[in-house]
Amino acid sequence: MITIATLHTATPQQVFDQAVTHLRSQGVAAKNETHECMYRTPNGLKCAAGCFIADSEYRKTMENTPWSAFGPESHKDLIKALQHCHDDNTPSEWESEFERIAQKYKLDYSKQ
Image 1 (tube, rainbow, N blue to C red):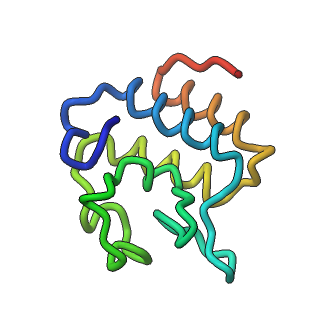
Image 2: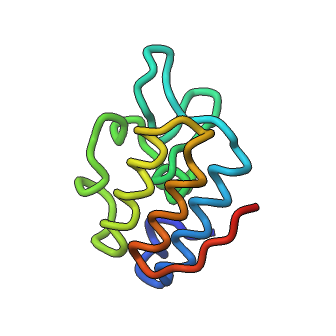
């Protein structure tokens, strides 16, 4: 699993694959009761960026804080694109966004 600590060693394809696999398996957005996106919800859901935060790295103070405030520079634009996919689209729209992101970053995409 890629985490904040190991993100700098990952390839863009590995980052993309981890986020896409996570969101596909979760199947729902990580939002609180007021429908705001969260890195991690109290019931354990994680957003596209939250799936890169290990339990030992997570702090509640990260919520409502941009990734750039605590996340490494490595892959920040790709992670931001994946965050927008999660935050701004319904789960039924994710696949088309995954494909668009893959094309933009010249990554392999396969619909599952």
